[in-house]
Image: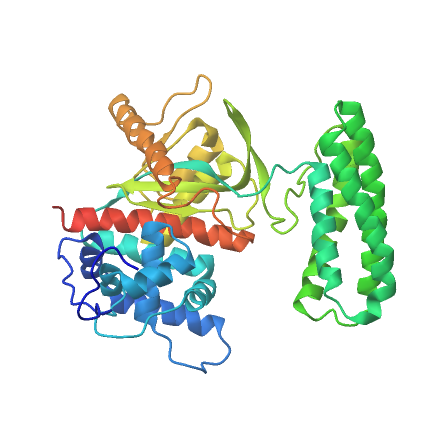
Length: 443
């Protein structure tokens, strides 16, 4: 029984709420050109889909959901809840006069349809809007590289082999009954692998003991891998999702096994070593930082345009390329977005070479502020050098900002490389949207 008196009339579940005109989401809704964004997304969708069938897509509301997630770095379920019950979020999505609301599955599928390229295209539109509004000066760009760390465990050999056994055992168990004979032979091997992994983690104390256990584990895994290849060669119900996932995992492990053996025999990491079985395009990035010499994930280039807006990019093959290549790519990305090269460009000494200076001049950069190596002189005047140094220092600031949990650039909750790239572009989009709101209607 309640300690307080029950109300005479039931409390209504609906309410008349006025949204403040100064709320960030309200001001952002008024800043964006929604018609242009809808046309952009419709063009992306037409390329992705073979046939335009099914229910009508609520482009306006779903683009608003993407914008909301970029601003808050929230999950799909949290986005569903906010759009359904939070008035400013409904206003942003254009649903104040509607009783419809997207669920988390619809938002997720819409995000997947956009992909990383679509998310980057949305950011390009925001950058053009900032330029049209006079908030940025595209003639000056400062650039740097950073690592987007993945949310993965430390990629040691024992851990990778143990993870392969767990995933393969799970997916083999979902296949049809005709594989029962192979499954029975695998069960004992799975038990042996788990015992060796536990032995390595708990009882192998010295380097020699760990190496001995790892080598034994390697040969068990190699036999286990051969059994799965035999299973895949037999055909059957391998067109299911589990079968396709198992085939992809087995192919990846076939590349990784020689790399593991190379490390066990030589003590050196093989070039281009796979560090995650399901996100095989990730790599180790040597940073040389105190307390964190290596980061595992993807290497990004970040352009800070004069005015504070940013653009992020990766190399087309997602490879761990040198800063010298990123230096030239930064200017090319800027040209692709705005149609002309910046007059002033700054980069750290990692991107310097005389060949790069020549290339930058060739593509239209007038004042090249790439910090020189050794005894080489700066290619700008002393006054411009100091200006470029001050502006370049701010690139580190924006990188630190997008890595904050508010935007979720670093260690996103992604299960594929493409999703990780998409989350990175979404974090940059969120940063630029917040910048746009502050500059468009300051309080």
